[in-house]
Length: 444
Image 1: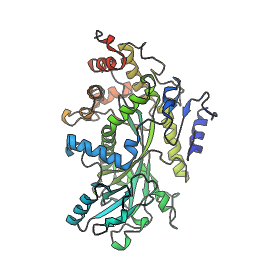
Image 2: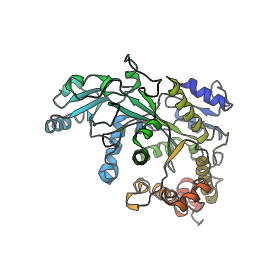
Image 3: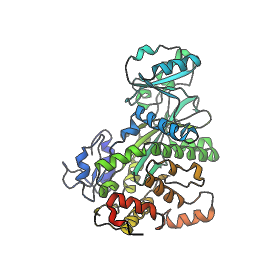
Image 4: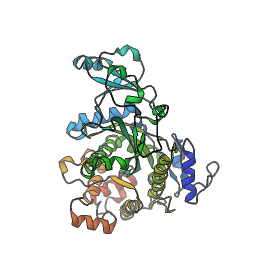
């Protein structure tokens, strides 16, 4: 266990009966704040899990994320992948386009971020008449400034904890508790306040320097996500939660081909289910309560700056280790099988058993994908680039109970939301052929 916040991680793992071991000898969980050596993936024993996946910078680099979402909009239309991120320009390559946009919208406000920054460093707000020469050849992201929904006349954003536990087939969850992070000074679009980070930025790293910053009291500048749902009421809460869940799912579908390729190139198939990754999704609710993705953090801060901070992160981490099979010391199904020994039936059962067991261990994690998709034209399953990924995703989603159907809900509760053993069929046959060889061609 390494990195900032490792103390809390060690405490949670210690509560599960695990202790830190030196080097790479006899370890059960590897938690790294950065990329791990690629050769480590090939050396994993069947009982070991790692908190990093190759190629996840497709999500966490701001410019890469923008490029991937744009690609999906161009390929599938704004109807499906629009309204995810604010209108954005990549500098310096799109400086001319941004300049033209500023001319047509002279009163618009823009927020500028470095392409690889974090914790609010070097972020600024500017008006359309600002000079772009100040950026030179620096890689930066310039996004249209959104009119925010306010709490106590202050701007806020949401830090959501999101985990991907499998790429093929895709399984994603977000935790029911997160953080509402508020600015310390009242919101204003007055030009004299554009450079005031305490008005326009919500990062705790910035606002904790304000003399009035309060992250202890219930009405302070850092609050539990559940307090937002109480504030806006149950009906609006459900609408916003569904929109956030859809936003997260679409984000992962947008980068799935990159993540899948990274797994296929660097991770033996029999070890692919031993990887997971935790992300910090920063989401802004606009004045109509529509969620917008601001950025995805690869190493969300896990240190407890306050009792509230510590409690939320401790619970999330405890639920996380349960979800990935550490808390119960349950080895993830299929981890010890080899490519040559697994039959089609065994491969099918391994995927189903793994998904079922994981869902049973979810605690506070809410499943984002696979999800119930009643309308084929709007189903995300159709947007996976690989045909087999589309087929498997469609089968999995078709087995999720519709939330509004009482009979199906009752069945889902009884089965723990498990997938039927009949979900795969021809899609899996094609996938097994590709993964394990053509001698499975006769198995139907």
